Length: 392
Image (cartoon, rainbow, N blue to C red; front, side, top):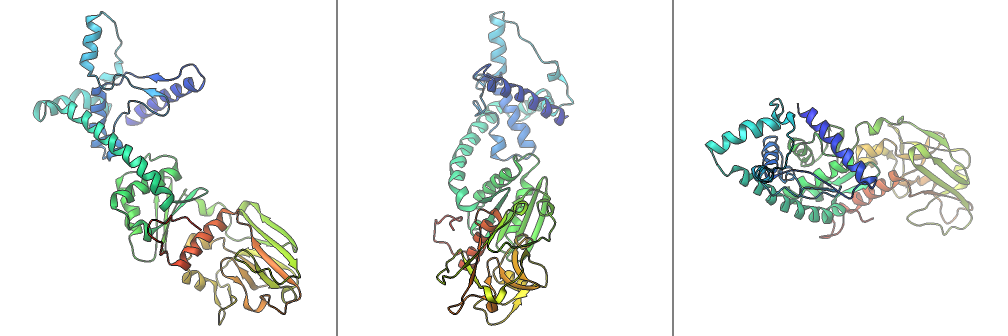
């Protein structure tokens, strides 16, 4: 029954929105009363709503809906009309008791008023006003907290569990709801138990975990939580490979990955964005591909070669980031890896006569996510008090 009511409401408000958008009217006024408000609050309470749901019906919405009668009792409106001989219409479906909302109005509310509190409708309407004030406060507070704790990259949101868990529980729940809404587009079918399941997964000291919720993939790895659409990791084949243009720009558009290679004579090319290979040591065909299990190399500055998987673990790179992690290979030898730099045996030095520079273009959302994650790993997430969590 609820589905029929919800669908009818959706169609009705879509029609109102279309009329406003077309310029037929500036706003649409509905006839909701104080009784409707009370019934809505009780209905949502029984369904397990928090303060967002208990705020009930808003007198004015951002979509152009106004409810001028929301503070007036239904019986007073009827009396006003009767006294002036003004006819009105009753929707016959309001008497159908297969709808839960109708049973609350016709059966449960009168019974509760008789047996528990004759002022129940007033109490419930007042509860809505109280909850609306709470929600208005949290709207401003979330606007302040979101940029500090939610890192939005394309369709996903990343959250540092360490910083997040230092927040009060009330703020954690609110921020998670906001993050879920950002990813899914709505909170429909998301309830308190879902939010608590995510918080529980975040609170574990180490390891990883994954929960599939309605239209949401919640993934925990090391110190990070990722919220993403279901199936995001399987949209593309895991493995990719492409011959690099030297010199030139190699773009894998579907993976939003771009690598620029340049041959230079000037040895003064080192900075945070550019790494350099000795061209004479790696001359020939170089290929760009994703990291694969078993890959190993010796990054410049390390004493010995090791598996890239070990580097991932040392740098606490989340599992979902590893899938498409780019490396450059000469035949089967890794000469460069995102985040870990050039291989020791191929690195350019003062004696190098020809230098091949490597730069990953930062417009890539994945490179942006990798930069954030790697920087946080290096800093061990020890942020000064109040410092935004997204600053890189």
